[in-house]
Image (cartoon, rainbow, N blue to C red):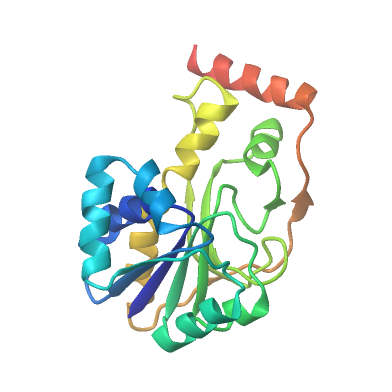
Length: 222
């Protein structure tokens, strides 16, 4: 299985390489786009830079100034013919990019689909007393509407006293969960969970309600 991680920095590529390097049965590649190699070299720590140099020398890492939707980028991805993409950047994907991947692009969503789509879903989940967690699903052009969920896990946040720390903890689980999802996808007869659209779409939470969520987190840890 050929896997291409779409990253917005060399540091992100190296972090995901560490999490996925022991995964079996995959040909793992990385694309860092929309940035210059010189800038990445200046802003990447020495340890990451050394690993990135090895990844580039072995043909596993490509760094380009071109955007993800640039025709040359699209052609390069098509020629690579990846089976699965990993969303490790801030891009919004259009159909030409999505169609480059045989199975699709896996997106780590810090909410429990299909119940919680959209923005501030961790906060809304806490406010409504619903379990928090992470969902990995194959995205489409909609807002968290991709039909196939590969992995969904509840993640309690009782050890985190504020909203930012809790959210960062959920975001930090992406690479390890990518490794689990790829293993699942290689299992014969694997059937994804259906993202049936039965939930609601949420929007950015107000400062007032965010304060209420923060108070709830602090109360849970006291």
